Image (cartoon, rainbow, N blue to C red; front, side, top):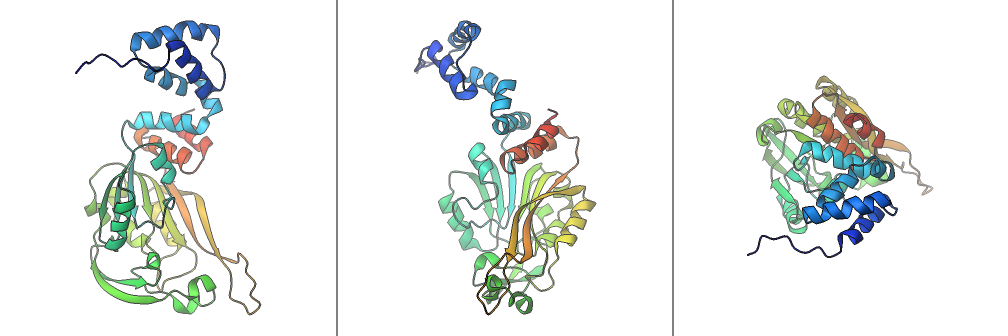
Length: 316
């Protein structure tokens, strides 16, 4: 088999015009038309030209989200690592990190005690590098898993039926069976590597996971965590408890990416966004570690569209 480079589908001059139009939105200047085709011929491909254009200040001004993400990814020099606690899928486009999956290849490690849901995810998302574990995370002890009629709401905590009856979207929830499950500590469940995004959505059990993940938190860049402001489950920790725990590990609240407001039950049939019951909260830590900051910048740009934060983290 020949090791000679394949012939380019376009002439170097045509490639130069295409690249400038695509990445910078303009025609190349005369100097570029003299120098770039020569370099493309010498290198045998245009990959170096693409990288140089995407690292240019002009590309940054025109496409800041992609430019910042590319620079962050260049610092990482590897696939971003996602740990997904509560990893079942709710359908196409339902993962909070879908934008990152579209931007670059990733490594996903997921956990969920409902193994049939993990099998569904494996069947529909086989194109990703993904390792899924069919057990619950917690404190390493035995717990009761309350499986509800909407199984995405299943929890290690029982439903707060008394409080939920005031909200039609919650009033229909009911437990259909219980299971005894052995939980594992997150610190014991994954390798000792940097985690770029830790996502938690375990219906009130987030604090139990976090309190048994000190080693993981010490090497985590971004946390995306579902929190509740009113107890949907009996005895569950609330937002203030999550915030206090993460503050002890050096994390601060960046923002809420989703707010779940529910309408009160009433005889008139009126609906309104009344009470803030839950949210997806995003936390990051202060760090001078270039790898941590690069992961935070990548998530800030691609997942949360926080471009000024991404630029700040990268020193631009």
